[in-house]
Image (cartoon, rainbow, N blue to C red; front, top):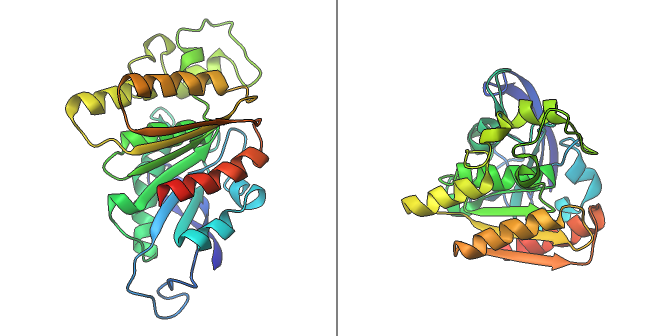
Amino acid sequence: MAFLQINFYSKALKKLVNFNAVIPVDAVGIPGIMGDASEKQMKALYLLHGYSGSHHDWISGSKIQELSIKHNIAVFMPSGENSFYLDDTDKGELYAEYVGNELVEFTRKMFQLSDKREDTFIGGLSMGGYGAIRNGLKYAGTFSRIIALSSALITYNIAGIKEDYKDPVADYKYYTRIFGDLDKLIGSDKDPEAIAFNLKEKGVYIPKIYMACGTEDFLINENRKYHNFLVSQKIDHTYVEAPGIHNWDFWNEYIEKALDWAD
């Protein structure tokens, strides 16, 4: 197995970016790095961190390296800052385009990855769970599986909030900068319900979704709401609730179960 820290210039973000990669090279070599590569192409998982986190979180907090070997899957962990993995056109920082398109294309050129949708997954925790759902659906032509743990599906909470709004995480100004006009959030392409509904209405392929959230997690109600929406629309997904809070004990257990599901 190889653990790499890589930087390159992102056109989507207009800056030099860093990401971590775990490559199960015992099974598949890396051309130019680990000698002759196997003819077999790897599956890939693009794994997103949570709010106030970084591209180091999954490496330091989870057993993702062990799981990469077990499932023979390359795992790429980018930094999303506190962007919710959405495009900020005013600043010219297109985080959705970065994780949904540019990073996928770059890593496919660098490593011997499958370019098939069925072999390409996106996942994340908390803010990254929202980012995985939103961008997995937004870029449904790229991803076949979405793994969303303790997802920060905060669109339910912040739509239509007033200027004096403030919660333990952020305030009205932050949410407006990230999500735009909050009076128009519901039904927009930042609303995970609207994106899934529109894909269904168009008869477009919808990636399969795996959601898990702890019953003591402060985001449990938001996850239940999205699960109930998916049930009402008969959209294929797996939803798990189990004892747990918003921490690595829960995420470690369920990233393993989610990868078993994705296989």
